[in-house]
Length: 507
Image (tube, rainbow, N blue to C red; front, side, top):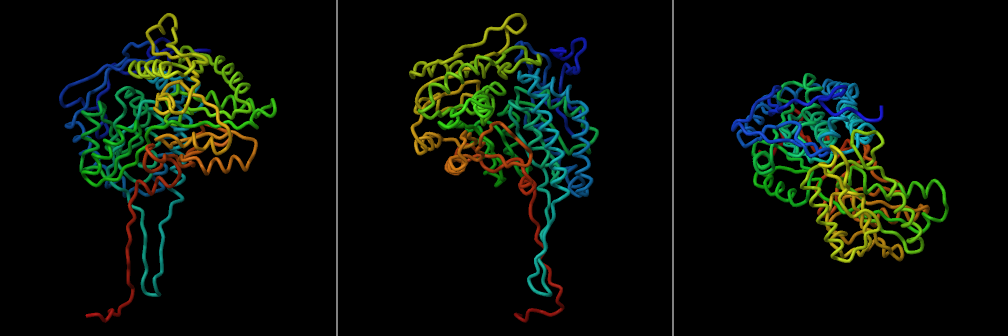
């Protein structure tokens, strides 16, 4: 088999429902106001299902269900919560192909990525937090022989989670796995562009969770996201998305003094020092692959290496090879196993990317390859496809400074180490960065000097569950992944206990 059948067609591993309501209290519930919206696939541009259009009334019903379920789930033994997470992982693994095809059809990304990365990573995250929970311990401090301070981890209660459209199932997992492990109940709002694949996941795992522990309210940001983020009934808000929306989420949360985790935008530098090209070997080949990582997931990644900084000594030779490597990228039907780049997630995103290609040209950037909408044939003619594009220019240009969120990389040369770091840090963002060099000292110094929460060194786009992820500057607040996330979804309870029968003698 070279291509998976389209969902719902003969031989397909997955079929979507014709309509998805909200998932509240362990069952599907229609929207209070009766509204629905169409959900098109980016592959062809045609709708394939319709989804409930949530409002504040639906959010309140979901919060009612979450609050009813939270106390019992929070009291469930950590070992049993860990078992539930492991069962979810096992169920997902048994349905790997169905989940992968469902997400590719809804998001437009190549199924080779969802099969090899998105869904396996999500599975591993549930297993990781199951293990992290089993290993978590409180603490005891002996103040004196009669006085002890106990520290217990307690769940926050009901948390709100708002996820983006670029990795629908994986981004949900990044938030759900630690929140559930920590003992919280969740109200989750998926992105309006990609709400359906979350429901495919729910149908696979829902019977493993007590009703009300996970609730999903579909809808648009202002109509459903804002009421959720503004609610005094949530103990925490976790959001992944663009920086401008993150500011609004933080504003809503501040009105009720609620903590936030914000994973926001990026304009990540990918730095290639001269010694990368000192030999024509596997390392150079790996670095060229690292350059083309700007096209992974159609560039719809917050840490997309969308700025490539290449040292002057090997600039022309490296860029010739990088252009050639980029032009070998196979673009086509996302359900074809040979496809490397699929469709952008929505028509709005397609138009945004094309507008930035025009902006780049007007600013004087040179198009080294790509630079236009990809015109595909047949059913794909109505899909949202963009050619992988390399722009050459200067870091002051908007295409270097603003997040495009597409398969576009802006390239500029640099002179020496200090110049590379100055250019790398000349941005509002600080989510990710890449450093490529054969010199360990250079790699270490650059990694420490770059103002970013994650610096990939001689690699890029690896997202293991046990590595902390988050941004500096305008790229967000807090971290995701790693066992530290259990603390982010818990409160510390201190019991200060005196076992002495004697009074202090103050009164």
